[in-house]
Image (tube, rainbow, N blue to C red; front, side, top):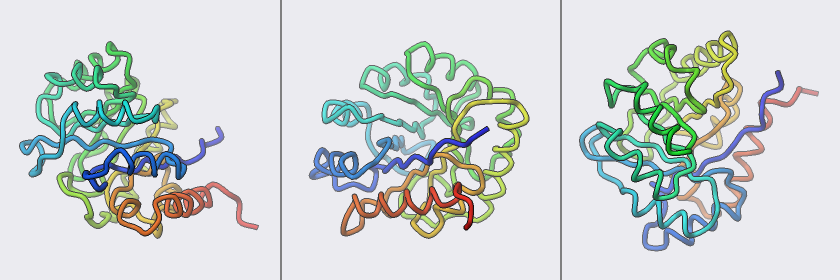
Length: 228
């Protein structure tokens, strides 16, 4: 089966919040496929970011695909709020709730696409019972909570393992990688089996958002092109 073209999802966690709308527009106009929204509660992860109001503000800015990543405990309490705020896709952590099956059902009931995220220290095989329910799996390639961290190299093996599970089970979900994604490792991440690259500081903290997105896409696409 032919693999889809890689998608680039800038994370607004690294944007300049004094002009967030402009920075979202810059990313979308610069070729971003999705806008990634990292929601942190200060409990599941040691940081607090933003809530549904920021997602709603991003929604009213343009019609970009909003990829909302809930790094929060008991996500079931907030799924409906984030769906109403305008999320297109909502992902919850398998470690954040004892009822991951129920949480994914709730997301589907809102009409949003459903995703599950997994931390670096959690075995990939723990996702097997719910892979048929998801549109997306987020492989965390850093320990979640802060932007600007370095990519954990063992993540390549985890992406490959997940890609094998996808292929053997005939599942159609996309694999997204979040944490430490750069121009330098984008090709290797896609080559390992990923489809979506989340990048925060490596996109937003550059001289040109559009140029960086273009370069990242070119590097990612090279992983799917035959060497001539």
